[in-house]
Length: 296
Image (cartoon, rainbow, N blue to C red; front, side, top):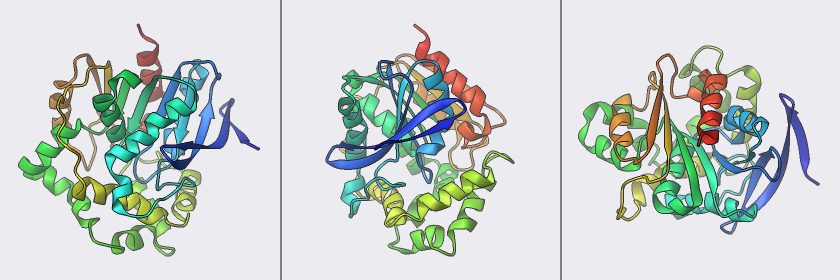
């Protein structure tokens, strides 16, 4: 039987959905006949990282599904780096659309969820009505910047540190280190953006068997299992880029070249927000997403 909780007056149903041969725990909200939205969290969160947009979109009449992506939370955590290639992860999201009886959906993602959202729009544009990405650039722009921009390379040091086996997950997600890592993550956001309850929920999600390695394998696959070159690097669906300028890991100099690769794009900067813009400015960011999805 599905579990239902109420968040800010919105009923959120929890159930498992099988997609792309894998079981994902999903949070669903909003009227079942509403336009479908796929909401994709990033590292090192789980579906609750998208709770602001989920609630706001459901209240606006959308049907929203926010999965714990593979390797996260209570979703399945397949073994091996190959299981975390961007092609596989994006196929999970595309499969959710079909599992819910639809042919296309609006897509919103933050951090790694934004990387998956970009990839969906680039490789399966017929499945994406509109795209919202928060604080992650177009994949071609990021690949170029890491290779040519020393400042961005220094900011991305952790991607290469994670390539080592077992040690990164032990340092971040070990039984004795989880709470400290949660506090470290909170310090990279604005004061108060991560409350004690959410930090405890993060620690619980990281405690799931295999979660540490599953989450880290996203980064390992991104370096060791590069996808084939895109024949077309342009995004042809309407796109909204939301960006907190105080991001410690990703430079806002990547926003303009990312926007230049979109046919129809709008950019919204949050000058006082960090990488965690959806937590720093939950009401304003969520309303931007609702307005963008509801506009003609």
